Length: 333
Image (tube, rainbow, N blue to C red; front, side):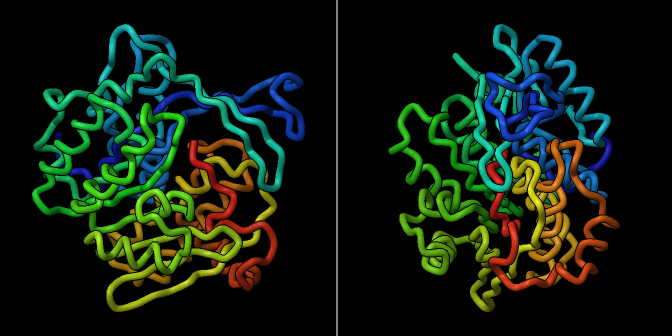
């Protein structure tokens, strides 16, 4: 490692195979487009697109798709040095169906186990994790061992440094979903920022009310709690301020990945020291741009694209107008 990373993201990576036809089920799809996928890798790509030095801590199989993932990460400017090749398992593939504006069923092919679930603490580069300006962890990475222990080893290695927790709830990944609240609470004790939609916030706090959930996240010890409320916008709360930023209206093509674009822009805003409302507006715009495109990683916006969207007249539309990302159409792949 020649220099410290701005952000290391921890979690899923794989291959997205998304239909090139919308409004039909998988049985009737004629062709698919291949791209890099996985929420942690998408956030790393989104951050790199905005000028951050990012790395992904994850795993791939010793197979052609694993080679594709590594090459795609490098092409997007994400360091793959922390990606482990796990023998004997296959790089996961994800399919989806496109029923705009807000129905995007997703199908994970990760059984019996995915490489990103096989990360072991003995392979963890603690020096790189400690030196990074921020560590972005995902809730789904807590679902199974040994990756769960590796995530907590990374949190210990941070020694009080910035930890941003994407609550990322995927109940199908858990052998026992009842374990999640306690594990989320443990991870939150290390976190300075927590971000998730209403359903994810409920897993972490037990409340579906955004303001209540944000308050409970603060009580867990985070400095900033961010709850994505869909058409009602994004709620950002600290001990001293609270803001609700309306969504950006957009004609959705594929909502998968909008939340990851939000995450990458959130990373950039937090590291820049921008005011919280400005950071949330930029993150909303990033999510909207990706929701209007087919792919996830390939669709991550540049700073110029985000600025142009924020300058557009409809960028300040009232909450609930149109199909907006607050981020209301996201279901991160």
